[in-house]
Length: 578
Image 1 (cartoon, rainbow, N blue to C red):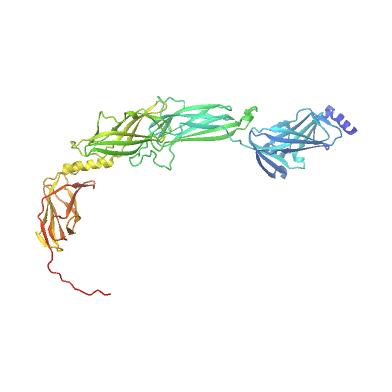
Image 2: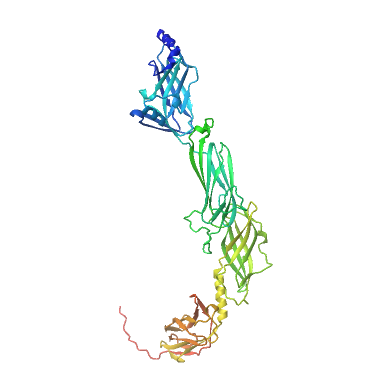
């Protein structure tokens, strides 16, 4: 006790404070770190090959550090202060390499026990709570004890225990970005709202980069769509945000129709392997919200990249699901039924629609079969079935032009009361091909034909010659083939007759206008008696586009043919074996 009293009188002298002292032999210190959110720890080597144990935590996470001061003195003592210096690993290594000592100004963070610090004989524990404000590697370097005028330093490199380090990892960002709407409608100009939410972070800087794929363009936020040019990309700065704050930016986006859209596919994208739409990336630097009370200008910020993508719908807002025709009067009047499907999650109403059909079809005016469907709201998956009464103009002398595509024109109104137009192709190819074929057949007209058998009688099974002759005197070629020598293909079949046929039953014939074409085959009667059913002939005109146009043949009445049974039969009889 007397020794302790003498020591305290010495330490109370002002001269003592002029030096830096090492550890006291009767005062021991030790440190420990409670388990963090990452229970992982690692042993390694620190400076001078001294062992080091590291704990891991994240920025903004509260770390519990326990400082233990063990006194071997007989009486309680009262220290002026007790501090723990936490030093960045790089600074720590640099000081030791230069044989320097860790001072308070070298510390990244100083943790202090509330003064006065009363120490009783035995072990005394003090708990610090440290919330790291930036990522990095840190060493629990030195404990400073001030007793009267004496400054005593317990450097961890001189203690007989491993160094204790804390690796602070970047915290998971809580700020986010969202784009609305969540999809782009082909053929529609839309306003896209970009919402940036700081969450619980302190966002110090932010930069928005927007990029458009094929068929998509934009007017950047803050620019007037009436005067600005449409662009493929833009770069916009965000204002700094405090926790809980939000920022909204608005861009105008135009989504055009893909050029290779066709009747064979109602998809608007040229490849399912390629993402089409609007991408947005936000590059931020941020701090954890629990560090806002620190001097943020001296803190190392963390970096983050946010991404969002608004895809183009694979189909238009409304697409054609099916097209059907129902004849009221064969060849004259029919009902055209179009089934439309909504492909967008947003509501649309149809303000107006109409159908454009090439000749020889026209939509009857004054007949409205769809009045009750106007202004009807539709959204994803809804279907509209619309019908139009149509008339075939048989008096039209023009050939059908298959290059003109039937289409349906619509005006749609979205939730924001914005109106946009949409043209949808209607697949009526089969119908118009029939019209084209019928038109050409009418133009060519029917041709006269004759069938001649070399004899008016013969035996069953005996071949005879049959000649087919077609008169081209009244033949008028289609407009597309005028000025060319017509080429005909024919086919002769015995199906449905009383004959077997042979020889050149299929082939082509080339002739000039006003001439005749003929072909000869071999026929074999298969039944006895008077035969009136002869092999049939199909004749087609081979057009310049390699399409075959059927030609109507008017056969003159054929002479009857008498088929006689054979009166003598030569055969060999034999007994059946058992």
